[in-house]
Length: 251
Image (cartoon, rainbow, N blue to C red; front, side, top):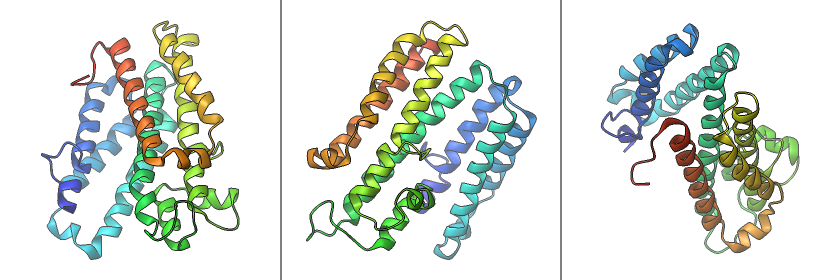
């Protein structure tokens, strides 16, 4: 199972396939990206290509995951520090924020109810170590402790990942940044086709800003996260259709 998600080139969602696709995209856009970014993508791609079954053994898996995370963080830093701030950068930022929001919802959806004991109601307390692990998976433990120095309730963790305005990976912040990027396509780069998409995302941004986690949990957290994921897919499909002339397969 680990091999399927890490190094199976026939699985389009594996890590190896994702990095290969990123490298292929970068090759087509080579004239728009920095030498440093292109070099790092090649290094990352080649390192993953050398992975063997021994690298996926349980005793080595944690270190491998850490190495992959470090490469992803390095990629983000190089992009931030070297890419020219034009239309390409703005589209890059919009895509990054939409993908980041999606991944936060999926992480929360997978973990939240699995961590709750069957004998306790949603929103009750649970072993702090498990919630620490959830926050660390989202790179949010220390940020959470800045906002909530004491105590750790499941609802508080979920609310932090969804609505906190100071955490860069919260859904609210990601949607806000995506809305800003879409606005820049219109106001800075003169792409009027962004207006309709931007208007809808700004309205959604305002709804998220007023979100309350207790009401979300009462109404069903899974359904709420599912609705966010569908909305993100709609925004992505609309953006692709308007600017690149194609829609998601099956859309």
